[in-house]
Image (tube, rainbow, N blue to C red):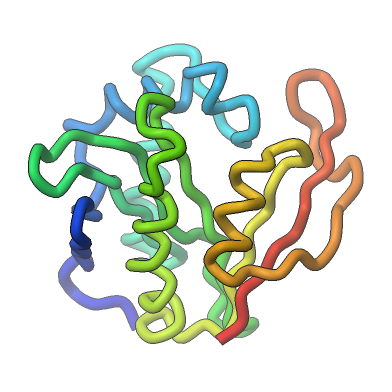
Length: 177
């Protein structure tokens, strides 16, 4: 199912490429930023701790359970954020979508542009019939991105995760092939 070579994608403004060791500082910058992690399930307090996330990105690809890309400016190569898939289930033919951007690049259409590149990949190459996304209540920007890409709101899982000393609820969105 997975190709031998890591899939690269380009659009008018973006290059989506494999996350590399040189991205560690940018991954840490994003996943330690209070505005990014406010609605994100993972955070790191030190650069060294971010190695866990770097290992996770590599493990997804090696074990063929998902694939995450670095979202970069096509012309400059500047790292903007990351997007991808995890929790790939061959049996259930579904995968979970995730994404985040460094705050300097918010509200410029980068996530929508990246999703337009990777959504067809999930249906064609990963052979799924369903893409799921879980959005923390209150993350209206993420709700809007998914709805613009054709995702449907399905339900809310109330108090389903414990984060920052409190239970949070997640909205479930899906896109069907």
